[in-house]
Length: 195
Image (cartoon, helix red, strand yellow):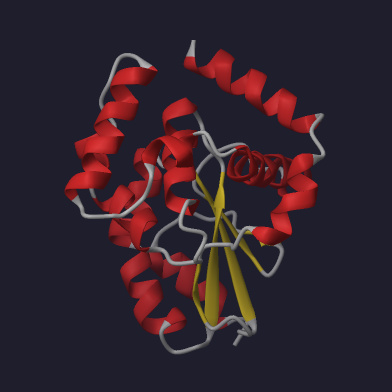
């Protein structure tokens, strides 16, 4: 049911021009030097356990060695795999400040909010988590924001169209798909070639 509903939303997004008109008004969540020589795109779904593992096991070293030093930037692209991931992505974008704090907290604490056998239960768990973490967002306004929804779904469409993204996480480095096993050692090797 969740997948069917997401498919319907994506198909509707394909025929919507709203995303193209508003996408420039919505700030991309990124970390690092905006003008860095290396741009990493991370296509992720907030309900994907492999994405949470990336944030736990790979991202901290990547941030320390490449993002904090100004050598690279990472842009987080949305690729929701279900309605719960779509709503979580809306919450992560809702403040529209480009800050990654909410996104990082959602990945770090994925098991606290990902539960629920219905979308209503999942939304309640997500809302309770966001409130417990002290993030000041208007939950209902965020998950009902059609401009943010278009932005997120357009990320997914662009990922498929431009990079043949079909799984999460998918990493793109300077417009080239990273094809090796996603661990820090392999990622570092690829980045070092570009410095």
